[in-house]
Image (cartoon, rainbow, N blue to C red; front, top):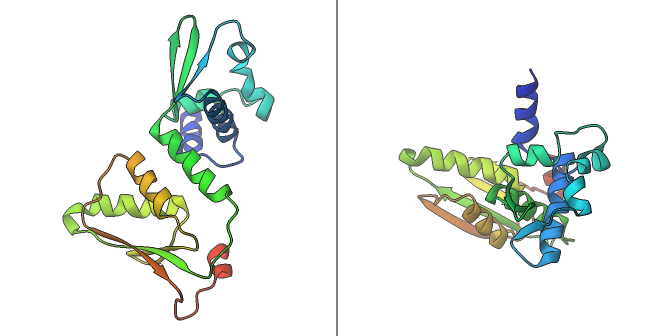
Length: 192
């Protein structure tokens, strides 16, 4: 029963979850250092308190922070010179990219951005994968192969797909739409 509970928790990080908060702390420390990794020397506060970080952020949920990030494939850790070196995996970077996109202050310019695609039946796995990722990123399905978002997310979504390490075969296009009829409003988008 515990294994299933862990799998459910690790499947997708929620913004308020302990694992996500821990991932953000690690990412902020990596950015502060100006590297692609976080080096934690031995006999430092962070080295001795990395596992206690779970408790500091979220109470008694010892394994749902740092350890769950390792098990879920969001971070990798190596031992070096008696300390630790922590890297964000592509999966961890995707979580940060999505969060950064949605945290930026945005003003709706009354235009919709759409991704439309025509992916052959032989590549149905790519099509299903793309649909799952569009939904996860925040796009809403208007029709089976038309997904919309109220902000320009082309650059971020292309970067996101690169991190997925998959090239979607077929025709994928980005559109800017001024009006959708029957009327589809921003309020309806947020309520779905």
